[in-house]
Amino acid sequence: MKRSYQVKRLAVYCGSATPADGRYVELARQVGETLARRGIGVVYGGGKLGLMGAVASGALAADGEVIGVIPQALEAAELANHACTELRVVRGMHERKQAFTDLADGFLTLPGGVGTMDELWEAMSWAQLGYHAKPVGLLNAFGFYDALIAFNRQMGEAGFIRPAHRDILIAESELEPLLARMSAYQPHTPIVAMAAGDL
Image (tube, rainbow, N blue to C red):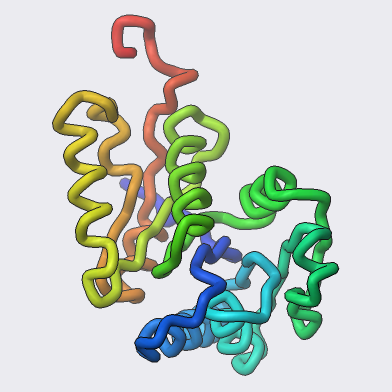
């Protein structure tokens, strides 16, 4: 019988930009609020701008826990959200991403840009390698990630992602089914535990 995976905190990855299409910021706010109402804490990049700020605002408005992790350079540029439950200032991006992994029980990616992609792919890569055994969720709202999902499938079909790892990315267009699938997550066999003939 499969056991439910307990998710107490999620690292939420999303853009610090504010797109002209207001749906994205509203989505981020709703995600933050929903997570807080479900008792799930938010670990995020610690900024107050764009979707990042909206996630934090939504969670804080619903009395949720919000832990921001921001590099010194960005904190010094006055981009930090000091309204967080806890704001951790770290030396750089590598330390920041390690904190996301250490503090959270899973990873939830919303629409974003280059930085968001860096965080998502690292979470997936670390799952493959065995550096963590946590669910990696992708909220494909408004079809934003259709092409990325297709590309991830193409990498698998071409043989660049092993069959055991093709389902690491958990993608849904709505938050509730995505959270349900993340809670039902069963860790994949990581590369470090595979026999040489399976690599």
